[in-house]
Length: 165
Image (cartoon, rainbow, N blue to C red; front, side, top):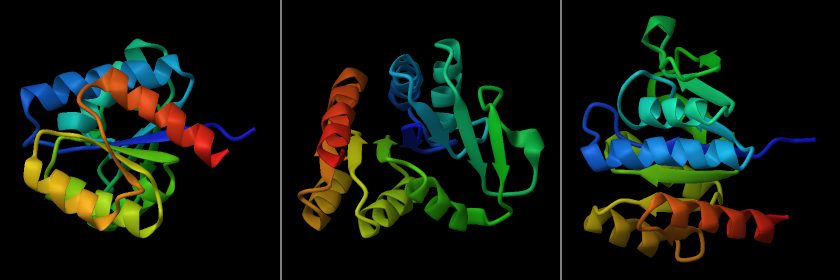
């Protein structure tokens, strides 16, 4: 039986304290649902916080690394996928996820959202970045969902998954 994979995408070094808190909480909540967490796998920013959150709740985590340096992996990642593909690995992140959550905003996150939408994936935006919200909701009114906190994100994921079943 296929496991549900939820991708959390977000900034690395540019992550805000709110991004990190929300990412950690999202990781915990995803694990509590029995879903698999997928991130960019590195030991910085949203990737690290979400992975650590999921591990704290006993979850299974996957990290898709952009390079061939496994020493930069988050200690919260169980399964490390080494791509040596740079930013091209963003496509793997979104195509492997059943739902994509953007926690915070940065250029890498924006590219992942765009790739997800291009591939008809649902995206939940958990950000206060108004320009990004306006831009992505204008691109796809039926695939972009807005949330204000991690619990709301999980409720949206449940609705999206039930509608795609």
